[in-house]
Length: 310
Image 1 (cartoon, rainbow, N blue to C red):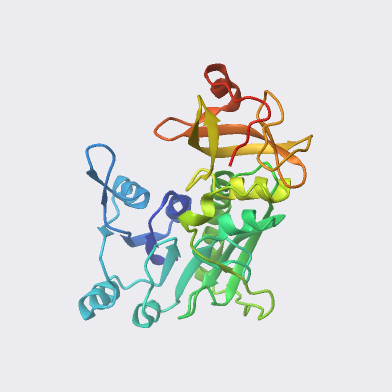
Image 2: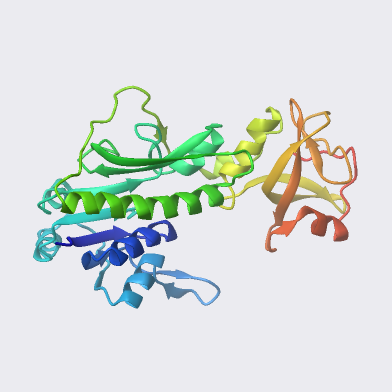
């Protein structure tokens, strides 16, 4: 018998999992997501990607501001779900909620636990220079991503990949993995393994102050910093344009030949020196403008060789 599930998720990352669970015949009793927020020029209320998809599928949507009240618990219990699936929901589930579904609450986490527990596992893995990451299905407990792990999928991180690339790949892998996990749970075959106490690291939330590029680092570290923050919040530097220092986000780059003073522009194709080695800027964005390929940017903007990006 397919499972009766509550789905709890908010961003685009969670949508493939919702679609896979529906495609595999599970009954989604309700979708919990964050409330719509004002966005865009007109500041219209913008529902979350999960809410948009749930309404398209005709699934009831709830957007509680808290799960800690007796009323919220009663409403959650009333769905009479076998299990809950949680993907980047954005709210902590109290113990009373975690204990409600008879088969448990299962989270999809975008790292190879116990590595990178917490809020920003994709960004932190790239910024740390990790060569692989993955997704894991975990039975939730009261700790921060400390629950027993059921299934995992791994993937390589190359230097060419941005956070957006890894995000999209893991979202697809995660949808398939959670569908397989719920299939095993339905058959009574889902096996759980305690997380190792070794190798625990925390993926703390990205702070705005971290986004400025430090050219006094080796080229590969600079590249991984840029790619780990692309497209959001975007790593940035100040670039000399028409006699003034203009703040520019660098969204994509590659390793380059050459050396010079950190931040020095080395050629006409936006190679920039780091403490060791150099990177070439491939895509960038001026404040208030759309992202641009470097060659398009250079058609209308002169950045002279020998100037410094700071």
